[in-house]
Image (cartoon, rainbow, N blue to C red; front, top):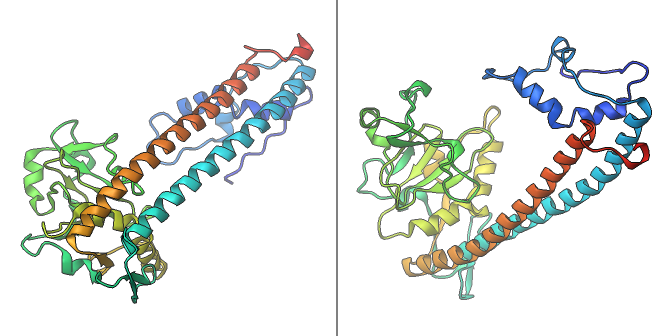
Length: 336
């Protein structure tokens, strides 16, 4: 029932219609039909019958389909190649982080551990659990955010930033593009979960479990939801180092293993968060590793941004190409 089967009448090319349905001509109409629908978007058969599109003679429909197939196949090959490059760069970035937070920077002698993704660490480093390194003087050093008191109707366009899972990333800091805010009054009502700079955040439920962020220095006050776990560390630990550690395989693999043990929705409870194993170097080395990864990831991220722009440019070109030919703004030479 989730698939709509379309058989064009004689004189209408299904191959041409295939490209029409991939064009902005169709998707602009589709989005218009679903405007105001806050749940699952649908394309009903009756709705589809209302979709109007321009079509030339059958021979030209076929020639346009041939043209777009040839050119879009080439573009798809380029798109896939760039996407693979991006994934390789991301994998390298993650492996660089994992290596730095497990073996350090100076090739020190190593010892065996009982942590699966940190089997060998420098002999003078330690393995601990998050609950043992969290700030013991903080009233709520490991926990999560508001449990249902804040509703969508409470969101504001300014005030105290209210961090949600969509603001977290896969190891690329905090994304505030879609930030919402709450009032000072609402923030006081959930004061236990107020965030401060250098708090480490992690998504603890659903498909995005494991997404991480660190509260930046410029964000002096904020709050969060029950779906976001937070860790407050003492000054004797480098929060940025542990942020990188949380994004590495050392912690992410532990979260994957915990999620795999659950039969329903993946969830990292507070006790699970407290009991995650972490690698703890001396503070001096934490700071050196943090600075090293800041510099390395800055360069890698610049390459990723350039690749993403290149990818988007090719995708935009493909989108424009399809639109121009299925709307007749451009014609294939064979029929001009």
